[in-house]
Amino acid sequence: MIMNRIVFSLAVLALPAFSVAQVKKETTALVTGKDIAVVPTESGKVRGYVHNSIYTYKGIPYAKAARFMAPTKPDSWTGVRSSLSYGPVCPLMDPTTAVADESEFVFHHDWGYPNEDCLRLNIWSPGVNDSKKRPVMVWLHGGGHTAGSSQELPSYDGENISKKGDVVLVSINHRLNILGFLDLSAYGDKYKSSSNASVMDMVSALQWVKTNIASFGGDPNNVTIFGQSGGGGKVNTLLNTPSAKGLFHKAVIQSGGLGLAFHDPSLTKRVGAAVLEELNIKPEQIDDIQNVSYEKLAAAGKKAVQKVQEQAKAEGKLQAVFGLSWGPTLDGNILPYQPTDPTAGAISASIPLLVGSTKNEFMASLRLPDSNTLTLEEAKAMLQKQYGDKTDTYVAALKKAYPADNKPSDLLDVDGMFRRSAIKMADLKAASPAPVYMYLFTWQSPVLDGRYKAIHCSEIPFVFNNIGRCEEMTGGTKAAYDLADKVSQSWINFARTGNPGHKGLPTWQKYTPANGATMLFDNQCVEKYHHDKEALAIGPQVSL
Image 1 (spheres, rainbow, N blue to C red):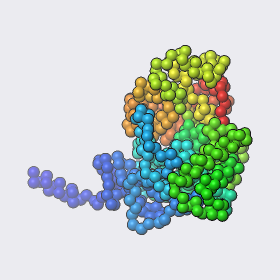
Image 2: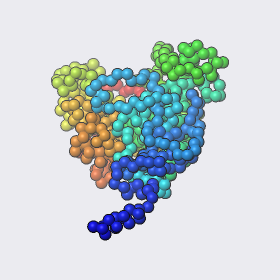
Image 3: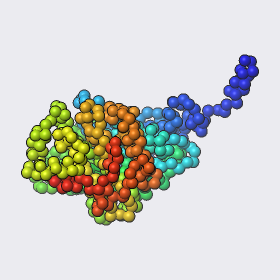
Image 4: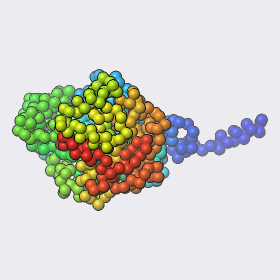
């Protein structure tokens, strides 16, 4: 007994001081402390924490910016900056004050705290200060170009995908809505790029990654940008941004229907003028806008957009289905070409692309009290309002595309808009030398009697391997975990090599307009070829 105590005491004395390099050997789920996970950056040292062997940092400043100004490098600091919790999010023009109980249960938002000083990023990495060159994945959040943040959904947490794929996951906040896109370029050189401040923020974040990510175990020469919904639109924007060239090497667009067109500067300048008019600011007093409260600025912005939108509609200058909203502008500088312009393709010609959408996106049947009680006759009557005498042809085409569908509500819920957008993006990309791969997420969630199907955002928990964090959306079933293993591995493989295929899937061919090759992610994954072409050919061909 005495000998055992002596041996134990000697073993304890022989233990070296606790260091960053030894964290991975610990069995403790959470490791924290003043000397834990300390990493140098260009601006100063940051301190994070380690959870389940993943080094985690939140709220690191990647830039700073005065209102409507281009971002610059963040202020440097001395000592070690604590980076343990999410930083501020961009203020919203319509802050959330009430939610629908059932859908909030499914999505489970985290709204964060607003502040205009919101240029922050978060990092998850399997190792730091170790000279390894792991693939880097930079996540751009959804919410259109007006809302959202890097913490908004539980699916955005980067720990699980980082651990599974030995990748470095980065997510960012940036300016949105009127703060990111108000066009004041008519009022002097100082504001020449204000209409694309949000885009400049994202470029600054990628520049920060290029400069600093090696210290966090990442390879600055193997960076993938990926995003969903508005985040997918942001990815497509960056693919068409000359100043972002060389800062990323692969791209993934998930349900990114907002990425096919930039705003006409003649309209955005009118919005800028209307905002000044609402605020009673004369052009020669333009700098007074810096002192207007965000609440007053947002109110003026909403009135200005409505006013100019009504004028543009009357003039026949507004065709997009979403109307006039805050978003990137074709300013001739930050964004010199429309994404559909053949000249734009050269900017990202060498970037492999993975693009797709979900089967059901924004489901019409959710507007019904109980979509599961809908009859076939009722469903067809609702379709008749949209498809008229083509209704029966459309129903037959859907049955051909998705023969396993058996609910009448399924006829209402198959998305055409985002799917068409994804195909358009893939067709444009197919003209370049880099490969493009297409997917369609068709897996049907069992939550709440299956009402939410493959809704908008439903693929994100699978991409991030976050089924356990998102049981309200996924059900947390074995089938969900099995599919998440396949989906997340595809994103990891794509980030690593530019090819999303792996042994857990059927052969995944490169997409071409001729073959229409699309990987359908479901309980049984399968690649199909133009499987829904007939259905997509029927009905309104909307402009995004």
